Image 1 (cartoon, helix red, strand yellow):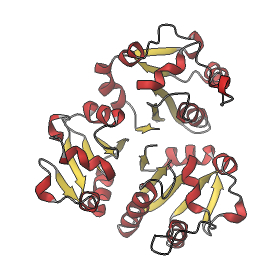
Image 2 (cartoon, each protein chain N blue to C red; image 1 turned 90 degrees about the vertical axis):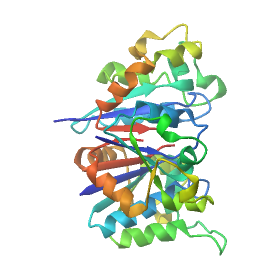
Image 3 (tube, chains in turn yellow, blue, purple; image 1 turned 135 degrees about the vertical axis):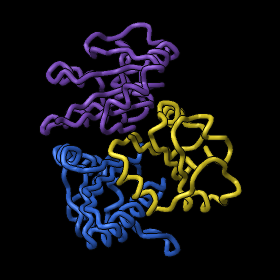
Image 4 (tube, rainbow over the protein chains, first blue to last red; image 1 turned 45 degrees about the vertical axis):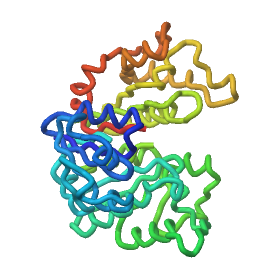
Length: 91
Length: 117
Length: 118
């Protein structure tokens, strides 16, 4: 369905709305400070969509796979793959 | 596929231009046709007069390299005027355009990605 | 088939340019086979108050968009709960604002091909 990009962190109200409106068929990708949604919260409790996080942005902020749960880590290639798959965009 | 990426915030202040460049490079590698549309303060990223400190990345230079690799770089003309960026200042391969070109991108691209303000 | 575009603003209409830019972008879409709409949420909902006047500070007025809204009939959506929270007690009828509840947002967003937050 839709690719949903979340790029601001947990204090941004618009990003919370994007997570809330996502449905089961959407793919949420956490990029930039959006990765904090997977570090300081359980993002799967905030959204129905499948959640991915950009590994490059997570690691640049000093976190690693062990610091996040319930998200799939992807690189830029993986992000482009998702862009290819999802026709609609919210972000 | 035709992939369009819109950016709205200024380079160096935020990470968006870096993100857009990385996505564009990955998309090019996968054989896609990529256009970056620069809106609002993001137009500062094609100012060839930008001079970062030596240890930092040169974003306008990277934009120029992307253009040389085939990425189309469209710049909102009114946004340029508002920021005093003139045509002689912009990096090679980028071009001033405007909302009609953005509309055409929306209409003709296969995928549209935007990095919110 | 026309692609549907929704431009979403959440920042205040005074103090940032995004409400003006969302409308300007929406109006710029009509040369192509596109159907634009604008959604105001959070602090951006203040824009539809009749007394909201950025020009008091010498800033770019928002009222100029009303002329184009009348010409194009661009849909303007306002999130009801946000408007109530932001004390939008009176609405300028010229925006033709349609109020949507937070519960309806998911459905609304998914009706569009591209939802562009500003």
